[in-house]
Image (cartoon, rainbow over the protein chains, first blue to last red):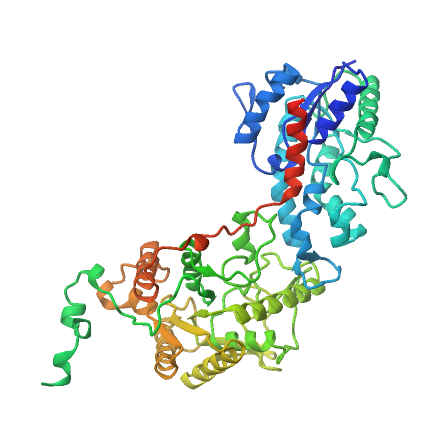
Length: 239
Length: 349
């Protein structure tokens, strides 16, 4: 069985805390930083090394290294499980939606945003994430991705936009990454049975804020990861 | 003593121009009131007006952006979608007729019968065909965008202390049905041309000045102390639909626009004329501010015009702290901070 390394956005912090709390020592990992860090170019692979090039990811990688004892992600061949580009709360929850609307939503005095502008925003924001997945898959590092927690009913965006629009924006935001991972045959890990009848994250899994889940949810993710690596042949995908 | 003997050096070609030192050619325009940095300024006009917007913003003026870009649209994309170029998402307003129509539409006194153009599977705003490079997804999207735009325009004028408008063309294309005026010929940027539906008009001096008087009078009713700075774009026509040579057509257009701007400045105390046209095209500059195609204005020409604008038309005081150059962007908000905090907490454990 491979010993996976969880890597990526802030949700990894919850998952790794859950792993520790459950005494799971076969999973290594750490977040590198919040999702916003991956909306701009943040890494490069040169001379056989992966380097983090933006100021914050470079600084955070020092902490990642201290915590995981992994000097270079290139060492994680066939072990990397990435949480990146599949957590849309920063997008649908951005304050821009307080003063803007799209589609057939009621205007409410807000400014209209066209579908083309929304697609452009998402395309530009997700490009560095797709670049990372491509590089990770091309180098045989990544074995899976983890879906972010579903939206919470208490999120302010629900009040601004309504339930349907929150789910719609979530789906639009994640679509390019989901499509690319499907094309490359990279599985997406997500715990089952965590949402209510409307598709929101069940309240028992709500974390300290409206974007993150709690350690109980993290435990489900860790169990799903362990099940995934237990069933998996020891070879990278998409290489 | 005759009247010429008491005139300043700027009144004489020999002392004002013939010395040949272009840096010493100054004071072409003399506004009745200089632009204060605290004044809320809005801009519109032809493509040359984009430079004025950019420079006002960069130099800390109180530039109105009534229709700002969504925060998640990265800076590099904003102009592509028509955001941040002018004080609202107008696209280029080339003619007096277009400006008059915009005010009529924003105030609800004119609703064009043809509000959407369809090209293939995409939909375009006939009055702003370039703001969505690949068009809108649906006719409903065009209409919602128009509603937002016209509401923003109305809001912009209610807040404007100084409105800067650059006149660009006299040649327009309009609907035969209701007289709706388009920024470009149907079928060029979007839509399709139908000689039965659209007609070419080359506006006369009387038509342009009538449009501009309507604009001034209407805006003064909305904002009684509003001031106006009118300029004429020095950029020649890229093509003419008149039967004239494009060079003589350019001369006609610019002559009419220049004469209208001059007359309005004479007639209205609240109107000033800024001579961006002369600052680029006058023979003394020997065409040096034009690119090799003798049409596009070089960056040095834009800089020369704006230097003159800031020197002659604006208060010279340095930007007040609250009017330091503003970011075009309102950065993404606390959703990102929440995620940062979650990571920092993890690293701290």
